[in-house]
Image 1: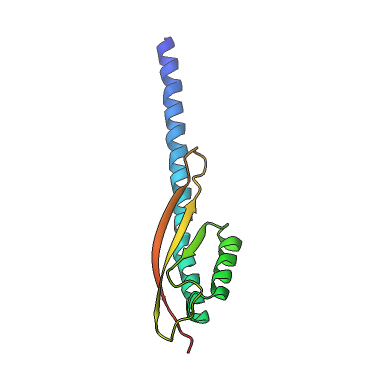
Image 2 (image 1 turned 180 degrees about the horizontal axis):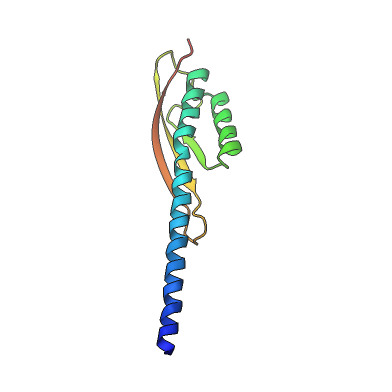
Length: 120
């Protein structure tokens, strides 16, 4: 009889652990879906500022801090330079995602993007 009660506790423990993992995974994917809207903001700044200028970088950092809790940073080989009209600007968005609930190290991912300058 005692084995049955111990086995019941183990089943409950495993079930709760699986539920916590599923919730943690879903929260991670919800945060990961923010990358598209952030890349859209980066492209908007590139279009309006003529590249990744000082003003564009400060606006991008401000957006990351205000709306995405500082999760994203932008790097490029064309930082702080203004480019000609219609010239593409390649960049990399680096995201550091905190895994909620479970004690797992943060996940760092990189996403490539390209924006086109619209300033003449």
